[in-house]
Image 1 (tube, rainbow, N blue to C red):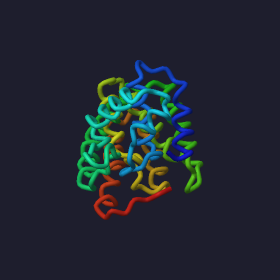
Image 2 (image 1 turned 180 degrees about the vertical axis):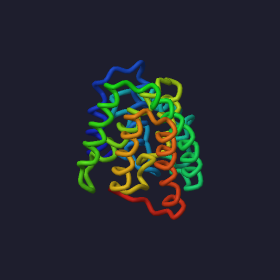
Image 3 (image 1 turned 90 degrees about the vertical axis):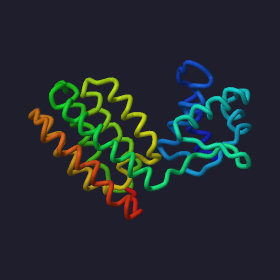
Image 4 (image 1 turned 60 degrees about the vertical axis):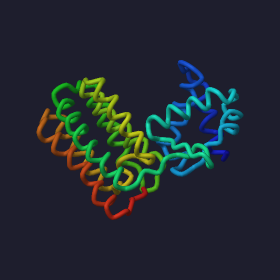
Length: 223
């Protein structure tokens, strides 16, 4: 295990989880989602058990949960590896994200509170202030989008979007330039500020669609 992975797991061990299996599954899920564990990485049960200070059983069951979500693949010879989704699958997931994110934006325009809008504006400003290559960009981008999702007032929609985001190891906007995301975030905040549901829906739709062409060209943009 790498030192970065050790540090990431250690940071998460202090959290409260429902069970040991959930501890393993939730921690590994987050590490896969934020790119700490890259697609194609092998997940050795003995090493994970030692890292989590658990017996092999909850580790194995945690990996099985991730397998059911499509994040991990078991092979007879190699054991568990992090799934590397083909570009066709990523494109399909983005097409689903377009529909759900557009709906979230439309609902948020009608339901978002003043307090949440101010929070969203602050997140957008922090994201815009980042220089290219700043490691905070990816997490601020995620926080921006989920602030809108939660502003939709639909727990089911937020759950579906959270599950969908997990299928993008580096985030669904990994294929977008920082400048482009920065400009579009500002437009989305402005449309939400005046309650323009159609405008927000259109902007959210285009915001995700903009990632499709780079995926088809297999050329991700790394901030």
